Image (tube, rainbow, N blue to C red):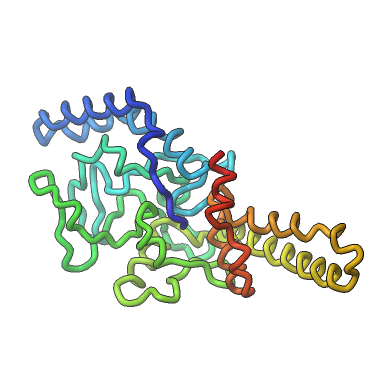
Length: 283
């Protein structure tokens, strides 16, 4: 998971007006008709997909997966028609947020839908899951206190949430070093419900970490050669190799969080992309 900065300027005004009109119609309906109306209007949130996709350079906001072979959804962070709070408890969820683009997250199907982990047999994936931290207020149609809720699931649009989760040396997602108490429970729940450690996603993440490791070894050998043969140092592609490593940590690279974790593990945090590097992908 990596922080996603949403940009409202990337959403066409016409599309926002369509969503606002649907919201007004929804507000006027009796409770018994709301779910059917929301389902009938699914085309609205699907129309946001390409704009949400652009905000994360095509990557899933939960898993950082990137690839044309992976189907993607517009997930409602707070479920629109039913919220599964625990194995035994569910309620109507957050129907008033069905057309609110602030509630939309661009998600690979593997994160957004229920899957069975072939390795463990556990059912993972978000679907309608939205548990809350013990003692949290719970919003409802009559009391829309969303800002006071304390979700158990991490939100990729919240920097404080993203800081709670990290990548281990084995490629598995885990709590970050400074994550304690309830934060650990949130990370554990998020890993399960976003399917972050499924075998195929784990393998892809590990592949990025191996690539970083190999490129770093090549870079260090080049630096050593440049010091040994100073007269030929300018011909050794140290800068090119350094830039290639840094590019894997940019937010437009798949599993950039894993690439950053590997560099930190190797004591080379200085190779992680900074603001000056971000400017190049924004151009």
